[in-house]
Length: 364
Image 1 (cartoon, rainbow, N blue to C red):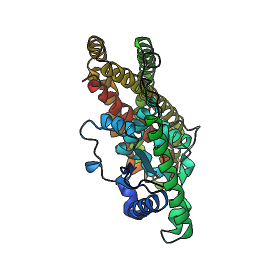
Image 2 (cartoon, one colour):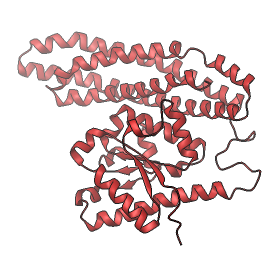
Image 3 (cartoon, rainbow, N blue to C red):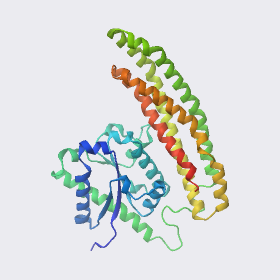
Image 4 (cartoon, rainbow, N blue to C red):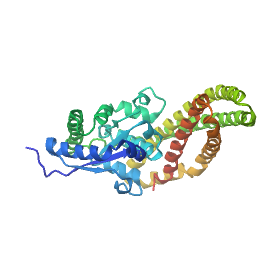
């Protein structure tokens, strides 16, 4: 018989609040999931839907790690807009990275409502790949049919069983580990990253940074040159001539945008991988009270601002240009399409910057 006195399963819901204003999904979803988990699986759910009460505190990355170690579920509610929201993106990358370090990616259970065409294991966007690799639960038809439909009830029963199974497996693994052996995901001297691995990760990061910065700078300068030479003629031209000029601008910008997007996303992926190795190594040092080595790492990481400043400048410049482009984009669909790569690339750079700025507190 199921023990109904078991502690509740904690679920951290991550979603774009602007989505729920229109989709009206979160409230019926959480209520149905709670009901099905208890009536079918005998487990109560504690679902956090507000970032202010999510329980991660100021050091939210550390809160994520603790959540994983207590077998809490992270459930992103995904639409195309989800990938555009900085908080959503940060939470997904941070939780998945920590779960991967602790061998607990089964605690990441994505639910996809809309935007399926964007999600692919072949995507250059690391966030898209994570959702695809986690074999997300497709709720598009469920949401379309609504909370009173049979498919909604079937889906909620299935999802409740899936999340209870994921948590139960993690709980059982922790409780049945042989005495003296490391718990699942616990770092040991054999499998924790060492100085060599950290040095290699930082070297690869520096190589990527050294390559990315000139490439991004060159792209921004070319982007600026095209705009500077074209904006005034477009605004002064007759409508037919303006359309022709906008098509020419779009043709020039299209390859630049694609290159910038790919470079920025590759850089974001490298930063995430570096972040993962560094945090895993520092956690190992802290758990084993290796204060001397921690101090060495504190000195090695150094002022993060020195590394992020050039990228932050590039991000600001490009963001300013993109803001100036909005009136022209409203005039031309081809131009909007050609600018998309710059917008997506800028989001990837911003995401990488936010991760890098967190490095200064890793050793504290």
